[in-house]
Image (tube, rainbow over all chains, first blue to last red; front, side, top):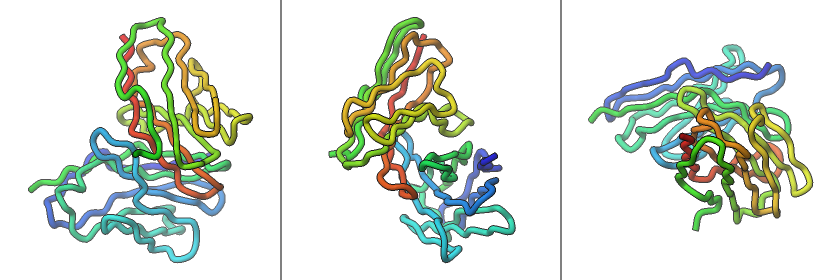
Length: 112
Length: 112
């Protein structure tokens, strides 16, 4: 069965520190993976996506993610976090028919 | 103007009432989706539609129905609302397979 696990419910980092949000997936075929961000009171915005090719993908707002097939992971990273990055982050896996399975989300808090 | 709009943005209703949530998009996409978001559960797919004549149930369709009035409009109805349908509801759209989904701002529904 397809599934997405985000092990960290909450993460707190200091502004300027680096960030890594974890995402593990379970899928029998080549996965298509996404990271979305949800700011308070907003809908979800796509940060980046992985379909194939280079396993390190760049996204908007300075985010990147690395696909590691051997670890079934697609972790999101940012070298230096800004206070405006405080939000909830969702990893998602594409299933057939462009349906998405979402993880339960990681709430990021940024300390000034 | 926003590409995906949802009305209303907030709604409080009583148990047993019928309620309709509406979604409109100007992106010209064929595919539309309804999700609900509960704290700690991520987003779960309620219904999806690949075109006006194609409606499909998602994982949690019980207690919900939908109508695809036009390519640009996709409505979600709760025939008889119950308190555990209190949640944040999102509409999303996409075009061809593999492409990202674009989300509306959400409707916060409270059933008393």
